[in-house]
Image (cartoon, rainbow, N blue to C red; front, side):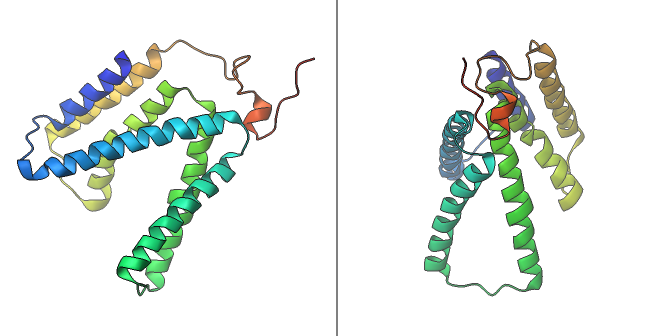
Amino acid sequence: MGRSRAGGRGAAIYYYPTAFPGSQRFGLVVAVVGVLANAGASILGRQVNRSGEWTPLIVTAVSMGIGAAIRMSVALATEGVPAIGVQGWAILLWLAIVNTALVFTRWNHTLRTLTAVELSVINATMLIWIPILAWLFLREVVIQKAWARLLLAGAGTVLVQLRRPPRPLFPEGSGSGSAEVEGCRPAPPK
């Protein structure tokens, strides 16, 4: 619990001082609902992936397929069929294959093998990478104070990893044996 509070403080330091006008309260509520939904999805996804019943690829295909069908239906019903050029199709294919299918299949694999603390540390690094990528690709300005805060958040991430006790890669009785990680069931005990 202490580690998650430390991660929250790192985010607060980066975004300090925070002053949200009343007009932004609805957006904050939507963001909080999104964070809670994401947390619930991670818990459910971890449970499904650690059960070992389905491979990460199947979990990704089913969950993403259902979500895509719902979003596509809503989009077509509200906006109709868009005109997409060759460049648009190339971008869509890149986003669908690389940014969605491959990344979420890998994420479902990590839900199966990593601890909850390790997963939360990985997620927390998004706060570090988003401003860096915005600076690199969108040419957004990041002030010196923000760079210092990003370094502080990165140092906190490293410290969390250094402070944790070592654990075996496949602890006995954890249900994460190497055979199960590859999508196969381990042999029953004799």
